[in-house]
Image (cartoon, rainbow, N blue to C red; front, side):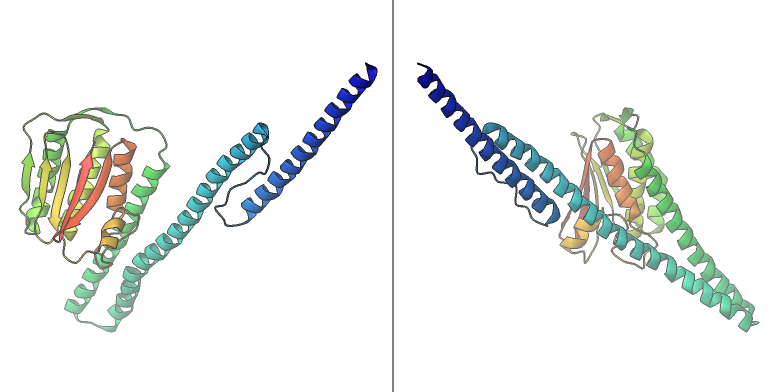
Length: 291
């Protein structure tokens, strides 16, 4: 009887020893593969040769963390590339008017012609205004990005707010030869939004239309609360349309804008849990807002 018990115990010990050896081997494999995946630029996940449920679970947890780590790594590199591009664009936008100002400052003492002096001063004033606009837009954008708290919301009568925004921009639009085609539903559209933020969104979109429209603007609010801004904009490519909401992007460097306005609009709409997107067909640009 004692031999039987001894034999069973021996088999159990051998079995446990083999299992421990295999587990240690699997753990070493996981450690080596994890180190390799972290250091290398690959999407390959950790693979284990054992069928042990606990080891498989450990590998699964590590793989999930690897996915998060890779996503953060990619986001970091994208953000770094975007930052470099932004710095380049901002430097160019600042350098261009600043170079012109310096040039005309050098030219002023070289002439006694008052008309030329007035012309030089007018150009310098315009270029200084461009630089002021750029710095103001950058400040506004940095403030919005730094605000981490949830936007306070209230019930807002969208029809009225949109109509008020259009009224405020009507003189600027007509000065550019744009007579807006406005169609607002009679149905009362109410949404839980931040009134000041939505006002800024409308203002940025209308300001964008003033600068970039080819002479027309259509604004629609339908029964479902969908808001559409449409205007003709010739010559846009699919890539340019996709880039419109990207910070510091401009279709034409000659316009007095950094492109931050649309990026601010997108940021604010998303913070209010809405969506904003663009479509481009038959040289007509459509910006759609759903709150």
